[in-house]
Structures are given as structure tokens and as C-alpha cells.
Length: 385
Length: 134
Image (cartoon, rainbow over all chains, first blue to last red; front, side, top):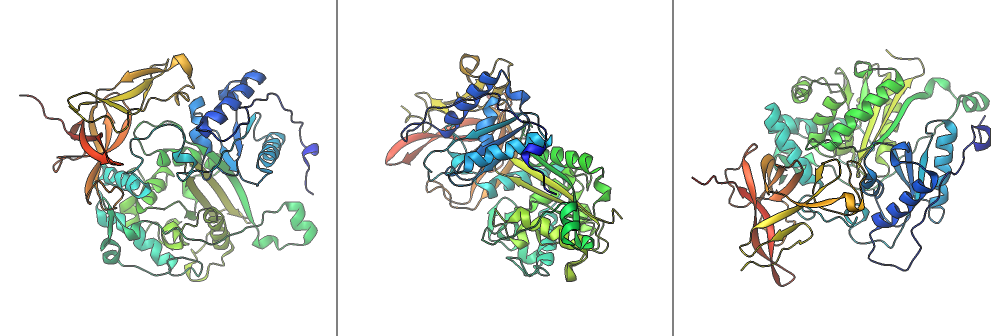
């Protein structure tokens, strides 16, 4: 039986705020939004630190406008997400916040609608705060710098870094939905062309197009509609967090550490319980950093563990059986849904040639511009291994 | 006399071409870069609680790479780029000049180079090895 808002605990509007609506101007969207949020907080008698989640309705700002705005209130790491639903974007953000509070996952949720005509740069690069590295540090260069630091600190080699891509292309070759379904040798990955630092082209994911979908159901739906319960996979944990301040450390890795720890607690499991993991390997260095942040390898030991086969099909925990973002591709919107689909397929035991034997518990991980991090834990209805 | 700063909101440039990065200090003493008026990421301070402060422009390299992507018509590829942890704490990314031997751990300092942007010569920020005066 589905539950309406009215059947959950009551929710209320406690504060309101605006930036005046106006003709197009040079005012950054960050300033528009902050004005309204500060006014709403003041109106409610609340501090930003009291807020548990933030939903931002926006149709024209483009990808990732949320955290670059809210961070100026002092970062707290709360879940943040943007809601795009055309003219109903703000209304839909309000609906999600109402359900969030009604369900008890938040006590106080901020809803902000903010928009202005799109610019060529996109919201996250058009905040009104100047940047020193705007031209010279696109994502491949950012991750090349992280790779440079990692290799130096842990004594790892460019060959060990490239081995991430070799493993994931091997998996992608077994995945009929992958954008790069071709196994690659270490020599092919290292042959270039070079992009930045130790990263070659095949260590950077392709951005293309595609789609992925999953259906989420309740126990009641399974019973009432007579669904095959043995093919259902339980979602044990859902965590969404936003970036905090980590000094000069890799913010995506630190955010992953915090979000994954939350997900383990929520699911009542630890890293040793995982059989399969899909993670955000847009660049090869990310897999090494994230498996360490997730507790799947000791700090600085991920390259050696990968080399030993720990993260291969049939290994200790299979990482990116789909081929990951490197092999499957990264069409942005569908990527995270595809991860849930892959883990579900693995836990059902229906992954064919790329089946990781005995997969019962899986974790899906995506980071996103902003930065935000989403982690989900899925498990067989028969329980863990 | 130096060309004007390419990004006066990020760094000022004196007549000799020496840059001064403009940072932000909030009421809790936290320093960030660059200065901005939206609010402190550390504690949400805004308005008069935010101070505009000069940074020394010296720091330590925490990562360095050669970039092969032709991102900037003013730079021939490959060019060298570094993450620099400034002495006041914030980390910045910048192109290096005269730095063939720079490695992780090297000390560097901010300088400017003349670059033509939109037909106008401006002084653009770079980092270069910090040479200790004997």
C-alpha cells in the first residue's frame, strides 16, 4: 500500500524568503539564491547549521548549481540535490522536501527555487566567484594532479594506475550495454595519446548518451501484484552527502569516505561484506582512491591489491563488473541508474559471462560536480553470504 | 612598467610585475582564496565579518603534471601545471614557468608573465621555483 503525505507525520512551512524577481541582469545566481535562503532562515529563526537537507528547483542553470551556492552559508555536508521538472521544478522540489520531512529522514529541509537565463559556462563555473584555474584545469587535469600526488605518496607506478583501465575494459568487453566493449592490454592503455600527467586517453571515460531505468517497489506491491520476490533485490541503504572542507586532500575521496561510512552504518554491514562494487571511475586514479576510502584496501595499497586480482571478477570483491565509467561510458544522467541495474543483475546471478560468483551484497557509488556523493547498498533477499 | 593584472579580482600586480594574491579571512581566522563576498565556506560569515587580506604568494608543490591538452592558445603543449599549497593554507592550481626540475615538495613563488588576451597585454599569474637569496 502506498502512503500519501497526509498519512505520514505532519510537515509545516516555517520560513519564507525571496530575492526580488527581475529582468535578466549580471547578478550571479549564487547571490540570488543566497538572498532568498538567508531571508527564509531569518524568517524562521533558524541557522543554516539546523538544516538537514536542501532541494533546489531549477530548470535553466544546468548541472550542479546547488553546493556552489549553499557553501557560502558554511559547509555542513548535508544531502543536496537539484530538481528539474520544467515549470514545476520548484513545486517538485517542495514536494520532495515535504516527503523527506514527513518520512522522518530530515527534520528541517530547505527548498530553494532559483533560475536565470543559461550561460555558456554553466552554473558551477558561473558563480560570481573568480577562479584562478578556470582555463587550465578541466576534469582530466584535476585528476592527473591527484594521480601525480598518489603515485608519489604511495610509490605506485603509472603501469599500476593503467591496470585499473585494463581490468575495467576486460569487464566491459563482456557487457552488451558498454560504450567501449573492447578488452585492452596494458601496452594499449599506456600508448596514449597522453592527456595530462600519467593519464592517457584510455584512462579517461567517454561521455556519450544512453539510458538506464530501475523500478523500485514496496513489499505490498510484491505481494499484491504477485511479483517474483526471488528476483527482487533489497535496498539496504541510501546516502547522499555534499562536500565539506578537507584542506588540500582530494575532496571526492574524502566525501566518499564519509558517505560510504554512513552507508555501512545504515545497512549494518562493513566493507568485508561487499561482493560487488560499482564506483565512479571517470579517471583511472579514482578507483584506487575510492576503494581505499571505502575500506576495501589499506591506504596506499589499492594498486597492489588490484594487481593481485582482489578487484577482478572472481576476486575478493569485484569492482566495476559493468566495465565502470571507463568501459561502460558516462552518459551522466543514466550512469548511476545503470550501476543499480548492474548490481541487481549480479545479485540475481543473471550477469552471464561477467557474473561474479556468489554476489549477494553490492555497493553503488557516484560522485558529482559540486561535489556531492551518493552511495547505495543493495542485498539479496536471501541475506548476505 | 608592468602590464595590468589579468584578473584584478584574484591578484594585484605592482609596477615591477610582482603579484599579490588576494585572500579572505573570516571572523574565525580561517583563510581561503580568492576573496569573495558571498560568504565564508568555513562558518557562513558574510559582510563586514569577511576581511580582504594579501597572501604571500609562496607555497609548496603537492602535485605536478605536464598537460598535453591544447586548452589555452597562449600556451604551447605540453606545459607544466602544479597544485600549490600556499603558506597560509589554501591550495591553488597554476601553470609553472622556468620549472623543469620542480617536483612534489618544491618551494615555489608567484610571478607574472606578459600575455596578450583580446589584443591587450596583461600580466598573468604563474608560479616559479622560489630561489633563496644567498
